[in-house]
Amino acid sequence: VTPSPVRCSSRRDSEQLERQIRTFIVEELLEEPFDGDDPLSAEALDSLGIQQLICYLEDEFEIKFDDTELVRRNFSSVHAVTALVNDKQQPARRAANA
Amino acid sequence: MSKLVAKLARKAADSGGAALMFHYPGFGDSTGRSESATVERMVEAARDAVVEASRRGPTLAWGLVGIRLGASIAALARRHAGVSTLLLVQPALDPTSYFDEVRWMARRANLGAEGISGYAFGYPIIHTVPSKLGDAVRNELSENPDGVVAVCYEHPAMNDPSLDQVDRITVAGRWQFGLKSYPELKEASVRGLQRVMGGRT
Image (cartoon, rainbow over all chains, first blue to last red; front, side):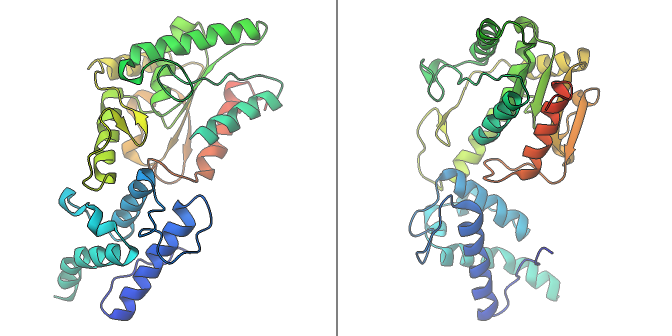
């Protein structure tokens, strides 16, 4: 069973989303075990890994990144990526609640 | 993808056949300048590889296996190389679109940083691709579908009509560039190899 993507509406949801993204990076993208805190701030991903992460985020959370959003600052940590995904999900969430 | 190439090579050898793996000029361990790489040169290299393989294994019936762009190269090289069988794995049948897509993905994955000119994801990018090359690949496969096995993900965007007449193995799911793990594609590719080798694996 594939778990549903997290749509954040609270801090707890956001933490869950952050865990989901970190788990994907560590389990699906890294070639070797990672026991640090943050694989992105540790620069553990090469450009192919970043490409895979972008595809995963767009597919999993049904969002589309503009090129202007695909900058180092937004991918400097799992927390930063989570914040970006949260921001991208806001319009969809507002529409769902309307 | 190099793991898949190695797996297919081992499978061919395990079944009493043989495989010869090569890097295109300017790529990987091959000599040559990547800046001067062209699709035509890659086709020549595939033909040269078959010539060398035939010299080493003169009693074997050789075929060509290509993954993504390599599938187009294999299709274009088939006649010149004098082989009848092709195994095409998730073929990128239009080299121009393929390089455009790779460049676009690399630009996004660079996260605003200036990439190394002429390279994407560490591999050389060919900038000058003849515009009609995709048509040549499709014509070759449409006109000569016999002996061709294509292994493709089921996602509609990846299934080209020019493959309709070739023997096709469909893989559940969707192709993603740079996948680390692709067990279904591997398994289907081994089945494809089995077919082109006449059920010997």
